[in-house]
Image 1 (cartoon, one colour):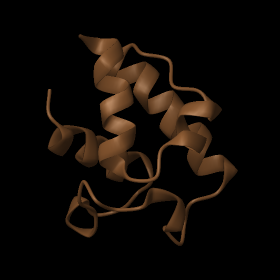
Image 2 (cartoon, one colour):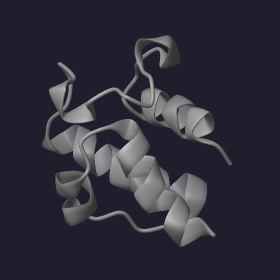
Image 3 (tube, rainbow, N blue to C red):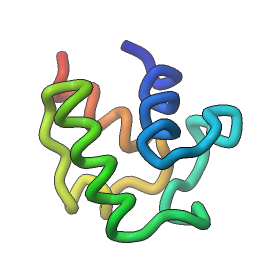
Length: 76
């Protein structure tokens, strides 16, 4: 699994085009980022990766790359 696949899944979860995002995208700055989006991403990571991502992970991550790095550590 790659960060690019994660970005595609993230974009799909938030009903965005993957082309709008990059590893350096600051996801909390997205226009549609809110508490519902956070819950959607948490559910997506559970469904697609079978990994629990919590509010602390989202709070401590700034970019999609940082969030992916946290997720990838739990997958390996």
